Length: 285
Ligand code: GUN
Image (cartoon, rainbow, N blue to C red):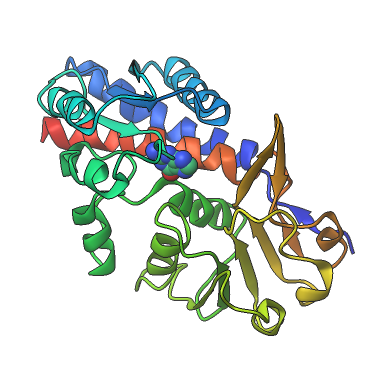
């Protein structure tokens, strides 16, 4: 039987529907949600992602602020920009688009974002709260994957999820999120990565495979149990073409699968908007 397509555009529209009411409630008390982005340099995929985030904000009536810095900006200049955003009352939350040019220390930059304004959930305090099982702001892609599966009634309770990738934006926070003691979560999680030579030995034991390695085609049909849920979250660009971590032939084996385009991406963007709305709500008290 053909796999059910996990349609991120459909799911993101549902998430945005719920956000519209919350944005209207904030508007009724005189608050316009404000989200800022900081883009350093001109990496084309990053510039496209940032442009999409601003378009999403415009669609929902969120005011967005677009800060662009030269690729050669010094760490002190970048930190000064973040300091100004931390104290700007119009900006309820913001993000620094990753990856940063190699001369900038990513950990230092992420730690300079005021935790209540960290729309990405990547500040050490927010990652630490997730590790403690008391999350406040959850990283957008992990949150988007979980919400996508929830909207398709994929219950992860007691399921074995194999996460491929341990990066700070997806794999690491996702593993923490999936093990939370919450309805629909409570999964058994195995995290594998590029240093594991026999990925298939792990994935062939999985009810759910989430590929976030940024390694095109790393999941092939022979690595998947018939009927398993397969989510492709890793992104690699070849020019303007988005390559998935999940090979095309996986669709013939999986029970549920994300499409190459319009799967996780729209959900990441929707959860970003959700975190932005939440930051504005928290600021109102
Ligand atoms: N680049 C790729 N993923 C992300 C993300 O989740 N947040 C930011 N800020 N940049 C990214």
